[in-house]
Image (cartoon, rainbow, N blue to C red; front, side):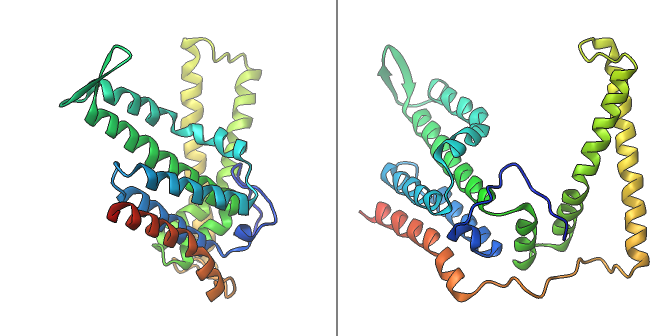
Length: 253
């Protein structure tokens, strides 16, 4: 895990959020998301408050709003599902521009859109301020199951290798007249996928045997440094604590 691996969602910026230990950021994002999910869908003001909190984090992390907006389009399939709910819902209906819309469907659409958008934005801010390597280290320090972190570690290390293998195989197919536009040539693609799987399996077996021969006991070495200070835990707690305050205020008012 010592090798440098970047991912397209990480923004290398000097900011207070980037300097926080990864485990505190992961926990803060998780707690914030849980508060958002637990908030009743009728509390519109609360969701506006959550959005302002994320905007403050984005400013502190120096993440541009346009960058977030472009990458948040990953939730478009869920937005399309939400748009269909007012037309398919049952119960009380309201008229709007000549359309009969279900009240329960409107609430359901808002629920999916608001909570999904906030969850995606929170995840993007975490990814933008934390490298993939640090995310895995943070999960390990939070006592995430070792099997999960090891699989993620090996995937991170060898993903570039597999992508390079796939690229070379594609070039070889093209040099032999392969044209992906023709349906009858899909067999070549299927054969390449099977070959890539076999290569990955054999490489994984060789790497595992090499690690066992060097004393691997089923767990990756844990770095001695990188623990979060009390100040970092306190800083990261601001986001979920503020979200809890907004939720409680919205419910009790």
